[in-house]
Image 1 (cartoon, rainbow over the protein chains, first blue to last red):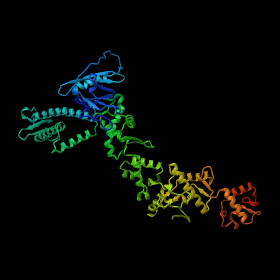
Image 2: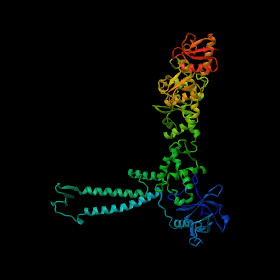
Image 3: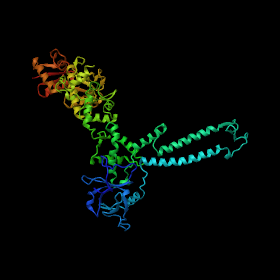
Image 4: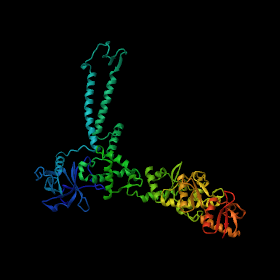
Length: 448
Length: 179
C-alpha cells in the first residue's frame, strides 16, 4: 500500500470482527466482495472475495478466508464521489457480479483513484448503494445500542431542561413583586395574599388557619433545581468534575453503561445473510470478559441475559444465540459451546478444558476431608471458582467416567472417589497397599 | 474391623456410596458384585436362607455411617443373585428371596457326602431327621432350610440316588437312600 493513504489497514478482534472507532456503527455487511482499482490493478494488494462492512465512518474490507488479503479500510471522508450505477432498468432485480464505483482522494488532495467494488454472484446491491450514499452524505451515527440510548437520553435531558427553565421562569415571575398579579384580599377564603414586608405568602384555605409559605424557601428550591439542571447538562457534555461527588457517580454510571454496552450490535438488517456469522464473532469477543470473571465457564442463560443487555434495543432470540455459538467451531475463537449429558449448555474458554477441570476435581476428592465425607456440588464450586450448577455437571461427568461414586442420603448428594475399582472381587478383605482404597481406609476409617 | 453379629465386614462397608445404587453401569456392576459376595458370605456364616425385602435385614443398614439400602437397591442386588442362580424369588411380588449360598446341586453333593460318611447308603430317614438329627451336626446340612433340602433331595431322586415317600405324619416325608 506504499504511497496510498486512502487505503488503511483495519484492526480486527481475535474472532475476526472489525475493531470499531468510538461511536462508529455498522450499517451493512456484504459477503464475497472484491475491492479493486480497475485503472491500475497493481496499485492495490489483492483484496478478493472478502466481507465488506459499511460503517458510519468507513468501508472495511475483511478477508473471509486465509490468505485473502490484508484487512483494509477506506474512510468515507476520503470518498469524493460515488458514481451512479450503470444499471438503470427498474424491476431488474439481480444482475451478475454488480459493480459499484467510487472516487477517493489522497489526503492533501494531490491525487485520486477510482475504486471498484465487485459483488460476486447474482445479486441486488441497490440497498447497499442506498446505505452507502446515506452514510457518505450524512456520516450520522444511527441510533442503536447503548450509545444510541445515551444519545436519546441526552436529547431528552435537553428538552426536559427547556421545560424546567420555562417553569422556573414562571416562578421567578411570581417572586418579582412588580410583575405579580394576585388577589390581595387578605382575609378572603381560598385566596393567596402576600405580606410585602416579610416576603411571606398566606394561603387562606378555609376552614384551615392561614399557612405561611416562606418566600426565601421558594427561592432556595429554585436555586437547587437550577444547580441540578446545570450539573446534568455539564455532566452530559463535558468531563466529570473530579471534586464533585455527585458528578463522579454519574460519570461512573455512564462509564459502566458504556463498558457493558455494544456500540454497534450486529443486526439482521445490517448483516443480512452474514447475520449469524457476524453475530457469532461479536459474541465471541463479548463473552471474553464475563467468562474470565466467572472462572472460565458460564451458563447459556447468563450469557443470553448479559449479551442482550449489552445490545440494548437490538435484542436477539435464544435461537439466534444458539446458532451463533454453534458457528464457533468454524472460526478460530478462544471460546466454545459445551453441551452436558443432562442437556445443560454452557460457554467456556477453550483453556478451561474438561481435562483441566477433571484433574482439579481429582485432586479435590483425594484430600483427607473429601475422602472422609465426600464433596458436594457446593464444595466443588468453591474450589473450581464456578457456579454450583456447573460444578455439579462436572462432577456428574467425572462420575460417568467411573472416577466418582455418588452417595445419596438425607444429608444430600455427595461424591466420593471410586474405590470399587481398587477392590479385589475375589477377596473383599484384601487391601492393596498405596491404592485409592488404602488411602480411603486410612483417612475414612482411622478418623472414625 | 466392623462386624454384624459375629460376621466380619470388609472396610468398604463403611464407604457411603456402597449404600447408594450407582447409576454408572461399570461402577454399578462392581458394586453389585461386592454386594452379592457379601450377602452370600453373610448368609453362609449366619445360616440365613430367606431375606424379606420389607423386613429389617442387618446387612442392609449400617448405623455407623447412618446409611441404609433403599428398596430399589435391595431388589437390584438380590435380582443379581437370582440371575446367577444363587437366589430365587419366593413370590411374584418379590417380597421374599431364597438365598442359595450353596447351589441346589452343591447341596445334593453335600447330602451324598453326608450319607456316605455316616454309612447311610441303604437307610431310611425322615426329611426332618436329616436337617435336625445328630448325624448332620457340624455340617452345613444341619439346620438347613426345608424347602432347599427338599429341592436337593428331588434332584437326587431324579438321579436315582434315593426315593421320597409319604411318611406317617402328613407334614413329614421319608427318604430311602440307594447310593
